[in-house]
Amino acid sequence: MKKESLNQTKDQIIESSRVSCRDCYRCIRVCPVKAIRVTKGQTHIEEARCIHCGACVRECFIHVRHTASDFKEVQQYIKANRFLVASIDAAFPALFKDWRNGRIAAVLRELGFTAVHETAESVPLVKETVRSIAHQEGILPNCPAVVNYVEQYFPKLVDRLLPVASPMIVHGRMLRKEYGKSAIIVHICPCSAKVYEAHRPENAGAIDCVITFQELLAWIAREKKDLAALEEVPFDCARSIDGEEVQQARMISMKGGLLHSCGHSWDPCETESYSVSGTQDVKDILTEMSNGNVCGIVEPLFCHGGCCNGPNFPYRGDTFVSRRAAVLRYAKTAPALKARKEITNIPASAEYEERPYVPKRQISELEIAAILKKQNVSGQQYNCGACGYKTCRERAIAILEGMAEPEMCFPYMRSQLRKRTDRIVEALPCGVVTLDREFRIRHMNKSFEKMFICNDAVIGKRISYLISDEGFDKLVTEDLDTYETMRSKYGIRYHEVVFQMKDDNEYVGIYTDISGLKIDSYQIDLLKRQMLENAKDLLHQQIAFSQDLATYIGRNEAKSESLVKQIVELLESTDDRSAET
Image 1: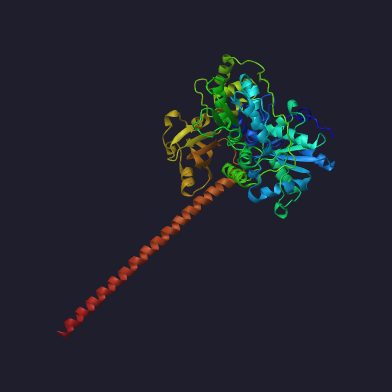
Image 2: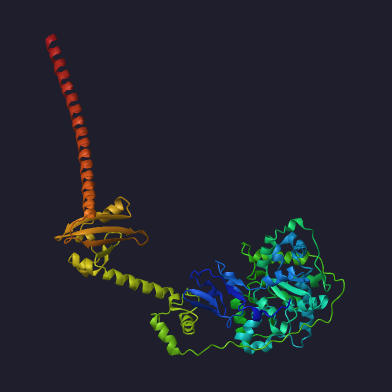
């Protein structure tokens, strides 16, 4: 089966599913080169601008994006009984952790691989090549996303990229020499940029396919492979490494790992070597290098903390801290790599070239100012970042380039929505009034002013100054959401609907003049309900009054009866004493 270049068979490295975006713009916010275009609310990757770092894959919480790897091709090779060799990235201990690491070689063989190797075994060759460079100053090309970034956006720094291939490419060359041209070399990693790197024309023949950690775990689950039921099997090895060297080689997935393996210090006070990770730090150090402020050797990694925090780890809640700790434990405790025969004379060099991204057209300052003015931020640039761009100016440029839409600006959309709502309220034929929590008038439309013969002079006064506030009072005292009734005032009969907006501590009243309308069955029913409610209130009041009156009369009768008895007893006792005398 002939394997073609990925660039000939797939349109993009980062693909998007058909699930609708949620207007969160998180992917734009984390994209270091703003390669994500928004069209009608949906996001798309602009391949010409993309550096394949995978930041958008990691950031998307609804998992719209994924890395377009070669998983289907690997399945086809297995069905065709081809000789498959796995090269598993040094970050794999962060995926399986502890005792499971000893079973990874066994489970990969169960899935159809004939041989399984650690990519870390290529690190000594990379180290030798770096050390052979007369002046070890420049950028270690361990991260393919950084290489893409330099070639496209810092082309003047291309000659600062050390002419060394990455451990993945060097390992692919080792395995090719070990197993021959007919073997299918498959790299398994957490990186999106390595998919692109493996299929660059200059790397042809090293790596045939790349699959991600996410796909590997899903594959194991689908095939129902239980690691606990497998025996611990050692990795295959093409070149022996042991002692401190193998520990250092197994830590290249961490920040500063390859730099340390090449014999450079991790000391933060060191000024001749730098190890940085994360989008902003990478951008900063490349900018400083462009300005001539950084000398020595630099290892920049786009993923914060290194490849053990790559974008294609499965979404299972483990942290970068736990992944880093797992890699360190494995590096310190795993056995050395022993080869049956030593593979030598493996080329580890590489060449890089400028391929700068050129915008389709130049954007003028007048065009930027026009966009800002149209969105009412020419004098007040919020720079809130909600749209995914750091500044309003950046978003204006993106709009002119066709990468963004005006609707992405939240303050702008809020003001537009408020204007539309105000226009709708003002155009309503019914009266509308809003009150604060003390029933003071905040706003009213023209129809309300006309209906109740008032103007802005009543703003701030209680609604009872104009009309009855009984409906609003019922909302509070009876904890109602809405209240509806019919009233008369100023010689007009009107229909009233009031409700409360609890979140805003406001009350809203809607009033319709029904003086000139014939009362229909609905209005008759409403009047009946209103009369019935009033009658019930009156009846309850009468009953309560009668009960109170009866209680009062009963108390008075009892007191009167007691008083009369006391008087009679007193008189009788007086008569008895007189008779005795």
